Image 1 (cartoon, each protein chain N blue to C red):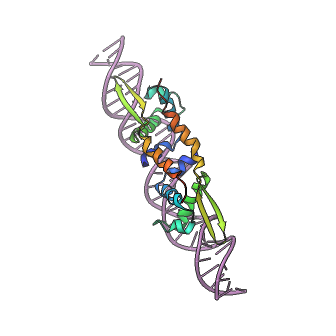
Image 2: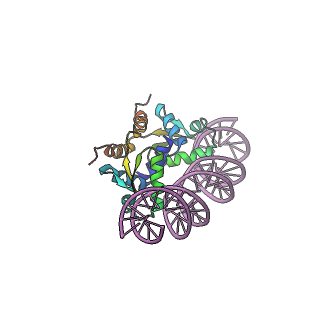
Image 3: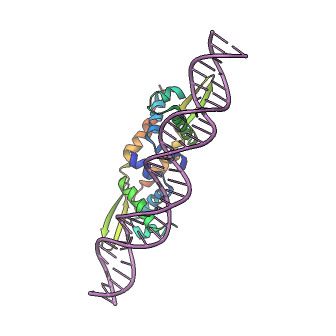
Length: 87
Length: 87
DNA sequence: AAAGTATTTAGACATTTGTCTAAATATATA
DNA sequence: TATATATTTAGACAAATGTCTAAATACTTT
């Protein structure tokens, strides 16, 4: 869960996930949404991929990124488990 | 949500939350569970409090910490909103 | 009032993080 | 094959983070 919380602990990365909610995007299309250099966005995408939150597929010159939310299941379970009644 | 994700992005702090799930504990009782100095634990507790995840109440010499999970509602909603169908 | 216990504050330090520019890699097109 | 486009890799750097020890604060007990 470490990589997951780490990936989510940045507002740019959370915004990237929100963008991918609607549709898959190329690295360039994602970068265009931010005032941050492309290498920096590439690095953010790498962290998101390490966490399993996105998947990348190469199509010719482009690399398409898509959202994968299933990896959050364990995290959701953990959060909900905290909410069980106290003693 | 920034402070919340930041607070959760550390395994020691997540363990502290798990300890508090069962019962309220004093700062010292919490510190006793870790191989980390008391000042460091105090700092972790401060970050958890900043995020609203714990509440502290002074009782004489002791300070009791308790878990507050309600602040995670917004975060849970955000996570679940990501899972809505694409396109 | 003095000494002991509980906790935090202050300040230092190494590591991690987010960002940048420059360069490398890979694909497409003229 | 040469040039343009898309993306990443490499390396640098300032800021943030987690940890520590020493000292300060607050309460309790003798």
